[in-house]
Length: 313
Image 1 (cartoon, one colour):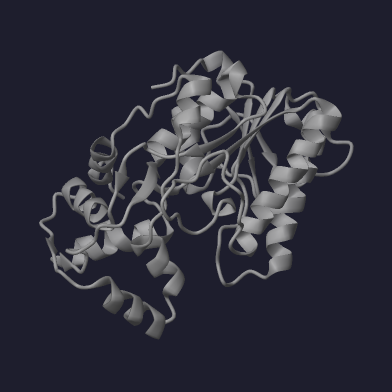
Image 2 (cartoon, rainbow, N blue to C red):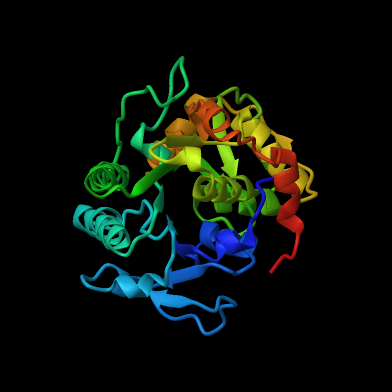
């Protein structure tokens, strides 16, 4: 696991600290980092808080509280409730405003959490790598890619060190989205329809992602790099849900339902995108994190899943 240097965490500002990944990262940093949130959190253990909206305004460099690194997690996730313009406003333009003001305030490094969706929705024979062409597949992914391009331009103009991290699907206790759905299914049902599954997908636990983000904040070699983030374990949806069941101490029977029937059912109920996320292939080559940073995921999938029953709310 990455060495957490408390003096270093004192100079880190985390946006989106109330979210799924941000809250875990904040805890890992022992609440010694500054946080930027949409509204002040009176229950926060952090001594330094600032409104995110104030950070993106001109002439507010002092509000960065002498932070040397920004880890930017805040944004809106993929959802049908948002229009293209809203993705662009929040995920793209707000990120660039934040990067610009950070550079003016003397922030040294900007770690931006993007999305594997920038590369596309699925892989065929070869996993996604840094050499792969980008193919943002929806408005959310496009907004993240536009932010990446804008941050690189800011880096060229100001010297701000930009680090981009594109995570695969992030899982862990209290995770939203598809992982939260799988948790509910495993908890409520004794069986799932993935007995014939042989697809290949990469995931990353919230523990491993938070550890990688801290490494990107501290390691001098990270500057200017883009990292595709995963656990380094390629599994099928059958293996993945079996791991969830083991983490929850649940017995699970996998029924041999053909993929064609599951895709048909998903199409009928308008859940094609979710079916593709779970049943399709999406592999990434995350070896450059080890090559550049010397980073190896500290948790196996089994170890990460074991935390699903810890401190349950």
